[in-house]
Every structure is written in C-alpha cells, then in structure tokens.
Picture 1 (cartoon, rainbow, N blue to C red):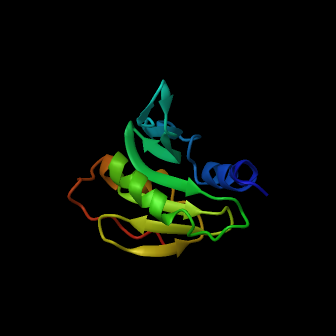
Picture 2 (tube, rainbow, N blue to C red):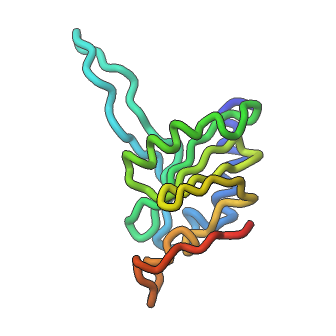
Length: 141
C-alpha cells in the first residue's frame, strides 16, 4: 500500500471518526509550508508541505506526517516536528496508518496513541469558559 492509499484507506477515515472535518469549524488542510528555493534558470527545489494540518476555529492545532503502511510509523517524526515548528502547532503526529506517534511540543512528551484526539482535546482553550493558561490534559486513548 503506497502513501496515497494509506491516507485514503486508513488515515482519512480515522480522522473523520475523531470528528475532524465533520464537526463545525474543524478542518483538515494540506499546508504549503515553504515554496522551494530558487535554483536558477527558472527552476525551483521541491516545496515543503505537511500531509495534514488540523485546524479548529481558524487555529492550526496539529500536523500529521503520513508514510506508507509498510514503513515504520515513526519514519515521519523529523518531518512532523519540523512542520509543527514552522506552523507553530503544539502537536505533531507521525503515522503509517496502523500506529500513531504523538509529539507534544509544549511538554516534550512523545507517545503512541490509539486514535486521533477529537478537536476539543487539542484545543481546550477554544472552548467556552476555558483559558489558554489552563494546562492541556493528556487524552488517554
């Protein structure tokens, strides 16, 4: 199974099951991070783009780097961290569709999770009565 098939058959349904893209004001985007640098003679190096960016109420919350099912689930950790830093998201995920590796850039915690967290878990400060200073809770899955 290649990366496109992994995304379509495993990752997209898992994100939908967690409510991403189906709950009001939640979106799943492909985010162009930086266009490729100019090489000269009208040519550019390849651009960098995150496979998925989870957005809720206009705020980018997480980056997901997908790899084909046959690669290790942590194959995309470096890219996910890099993209999360550039997009200033708290969470980064690396997945091969079978396992999901989560990185919390605020706490430094890295762990495997069973399912993608629903949007309120990633954005408690965007819920009524919540404050940005309030600590994020670990989502036990």
